[in-house]
Image 1 (cartoon, rainbow, N blue to C red):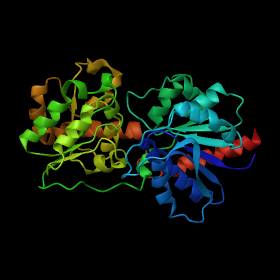
Image 2: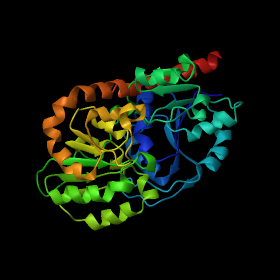
Image 3: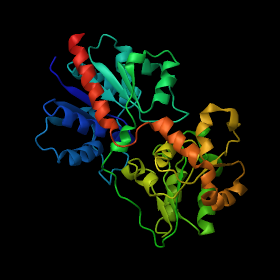
Image 4: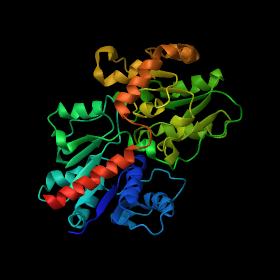
Length: 375
């Protein structure tokens, strides 16, 4: 079995910024080590291929996974994906010839869980952080090595009985992603920028109860430029998101994005002055640089005693839609009251955000590769 590392870019484009920085770092640490980047669509191929042009002589190749789908390439729009399980089943014999495979989602871990005889060692790196991460998913235990951002996150896995030698805190890999789409959307007037970022799962989201009213009330108030950038998967379950964005197209105070790569590459969390949301882990990316936040408790959760809502210590929580605009209006002056909690939350959840995490993750992959030979 030749030394080679496979990276699985098979899921949504939101996973790319959690994986590609490790590809780059591994290329720097081990420039002669071949890497296979398995992609599921031509969108993934176009994005990653453009960045690899900076490394024309590196032994890094993009490979089309079985069932690869050609899609219209349009500014990184999240594409329709091929069925994942059949793709993985057909990919398994090829991965069996590779010592180490790296993924950022649980679905790929069906391979080592269902095929424990597969010689490939799977390294799982985190893509979602925060108090609602699904840490108890049984597939996670099939990973040979799990990379998490922070020591606090590591402890949550150890408390579930995961082997301590296989759980490593590296820092937040996405903080090292260099290929953001742009620094800030263009607006007609210079106003504070508000990011509304509802979650895609109904039990976690403010969208179904309040979402459209939130957008309309914010715009009617006329005090903010709005970036409406929900989770990419929200439109799958709430097609009215697409209709609302079409309705708002052309407004100088609104930037709607429910599917492009910019919605997941860190562009909007970096550009906004104020965060409005519910339970998305993008809040934690926003808090790398603490700023005002407001949270929408549209479902009436008893959140104060529920660890799933631990992130709501970072700002005012709105329990009634009529409290939305007053909370947004005072968010700036109220921010000092939450600033220390925000900084602690970001540090505890994300660990090191200096950009050094990809190199640590790459070092861990090399360690797993070396152990594969020793074992």
